[in-house]
Length: 418
Length: 168
Image (cartoon, rainbow over all chains, first blue to last red):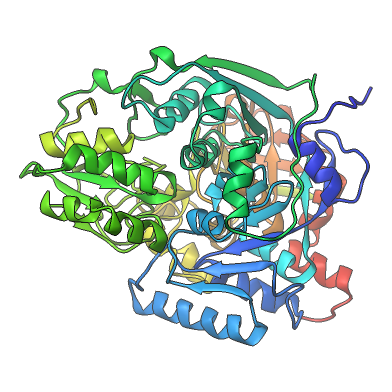
């Protein structure tokens, strides 16, 4: 029997596909509300031209910006940027942000593109981030994005949903990053494969929007298709400041049968670190304290927001980074950068001996800006520690919270943030 | 639709950074060039030992990580005929289908097939035959809608037909 109690994912996909109800495992054609791409819009463009449609389906629903390799790391990227600028002009793409705004997963939230109940697809795996606003947001490939540009819709399999209940109060210096790493450690790299994740519980209710975005950003690393934080008053207040578009909050029904449930109390949770070379290889920081690091990196779509920079600045203020360690700080967006300047964080980083780079993805994906030599060790607030991800395949990447990375940069070795 | 080929075998959690290194993401159009970098950084032996026409057999969560379509494109243009795995990560799975690279979920495949075996995949029925052992391995049959995209050689030809756009 088909259950009439529905999850957020089922309700949004029913609406987007024009059906009364949909159930897990069904394949639907969903109308897309927002279609986002970064530099790989160049890959999309090639496929779009091959389809042979002259005009995009809706110039006001496509967002294109550059964040992966800005400013251009090579002539080749410069040519990509140039081609896309021309395309955006020709097609009169309303929301083309060039390289001015920062990382897509921060910028779209800041500029009011993430709306509850809508379907947002992005040619980037961490598109799950936008689920922090109750948006059905998922990563797709370039060719299917070309299909979206042409037709405004794409096929989606309705996912089963996992409910994660989080209660309790964090210890000092323990953050959403530690929580989500802990969860990925429990469920594993494919523990939520093809599934939707819903975060519930009092800890989530008390969490800032920025922290909720950390929670929605990383479930991709356990295979999730979407990761929702059900919208509440805080969400609505955040959105009202950024958009006057109408939206409808969609919440799960009571008594939904989830495909899995996980209950976590964070009261005893300590700082966590994901060790090489997989994000589910998670240990308490205390187990690897003392490991020397060559590079400390604070930034990315996971942890480059103002509260992340604030946590790092508090630890680094008036101190100097260890002489054998280099510190890179990358604000997630232009807006975050400006606020961090205004609050004096940037000066703290520079005085501590850090390099502050322009908003963007930086070295996270191994394209440029701070790659690693063989045998080097980097402790980063980013989202992946795969072999070869950030430069040499002989290097090692560890993932942790901004506080852990900042404290470790001072000591030159992995250490607890407080 | 029968697909025959020589097996090139990998383990679990083969991610898209491993399949296609991030430093080559600036290659956006030249698919033959993408094919020159398959597994280059972490498994450079692939480019030496694999041959066009091979079938990749992977473990759990094949293609996890980044959404980079180049990971599926480079395999297709290298000449990989199909990828069979215990399970796939969702975006790689979608990308492969949309590019017309057959991807088949076959639980237990890594136990029943060895590196360098020859296998035969019946895509329509959803079975795989190991030519060395003559064992038949049950795979998950692709849903009809997805099968239609794969057998049309990907989403673009499929959409062209659907939208009534002719020619190449």
